[in-house]
Length: 367
Image (cartoon, rainbow, N blue to C red; front, side, top):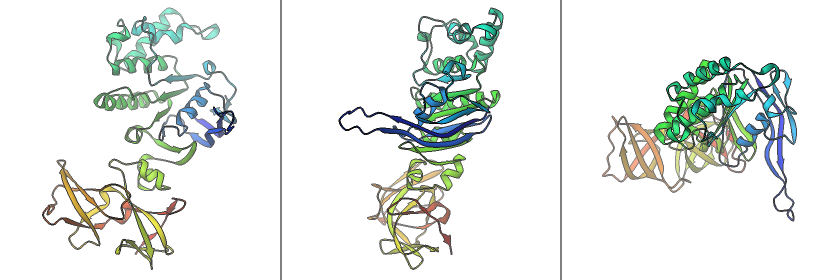
């Protein structure tokens, strides 16, 4: 089931009646979610990702714009009639009910032609439980389950209705690191097995990039970039996207373009073609540094962290906007920690320029 968002806008009235300034939570969002794909809505708190999800679900009504499920305009259709499965951050399980009763609950509320027999409901509940691998826990109460198991019950409850669209609102936020990893892998497996179009809201960029077919990066209600996770990482549209994606984060420095060369301080670190002379922001991915004793970029060495197959070099440079510059190099390299200085050459495809005023990307050709 493809989902089409057409000029979707949500405006909330101001809480301060005297100021009277409205809050634009989502601003003119247009996007087609392909059938059977998992889409990650990604951004910091307050960017509008959950509001977008709630508009798709019908829990919130758009101020303007339309929502289509396939060819059906569902903008004015109630939540219960949209055919969606919704999983919240806090699981929202009924504590007095068993796992089986929690999963069955949506089916027991079906009426008319949709009403199922007890046998059919039990069959569907068991199938959903098996899909999320909790079929042995059906008689337990939520208090007897781990956080990861409770989350699986919530997913099974959303799937048991055989929804057209599955919506997940920060479903892993309450889990510890190991469970987050395990559960996100399970969500991806379940989505692939069922083929249900899924929208996954998260502020965790690593989470979104690891399981999404496409990611939508948002800031202050405005879509910044849409694309495949690796493509967005490798080709950010602006400085915000470049900074938001990546662990460790991208290194940002102030620089200048003069005569077709990019300068950091007085050091010409890269030749670029077709870029006018101007002050710029420079982004360099941690993996974009090459240890080179004759390299054009020099930094003051602070620390070397051995991480097994990689080495993280922590250094500083007066032009850096980050407190430190962090570069990731292969552990086969040897760093002279006694010199106090480290020199790099730069991988051009890991090096980005941005306008100083607009922070939009400046594209260039490497000579």
